[in-house]
Length: 173
Image (cartoon, rainbow, N blue to C red; front, side, top):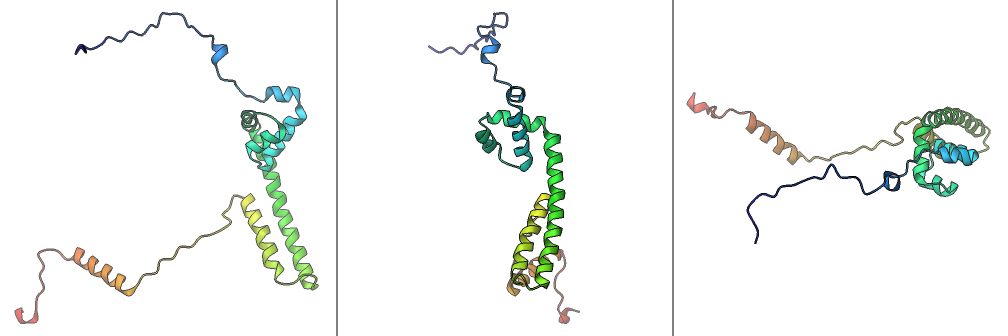
């Protein structure tokens, strides 16, 4: 039969552990093993990270654990960031040089005028993406009818008129 007495909980904090921490602790991934075993692969992983490839893709291509790639990403953050900054600068330079070449070819009638917007648009989007700027702008428009505006104005008037004020007709004056 169940009892209504509260049970006393005893936590055995003075007993020795039955497991060894080395057997059950999770692995710590640092990338040290890969750097010692295969420094070339380690460098390729860093380069792929700088190029912006997905972690799982890098792990699959180089046959390393995704956790190792993540650890390398955190460890080599400054290197990855400086390579990305260099790439951004090169993209801006390439954008400018390509635009000048397109204009030159357009002046010499070597390319049709309809190609210019497409080429420049793609190049400009890539440059903006590298600089971290928005590549598209979404504009949302709401169409409002006259009836909706009148209803809204009437609601505003009703809210602004105090309760004590009543309409005065010319006959009452």
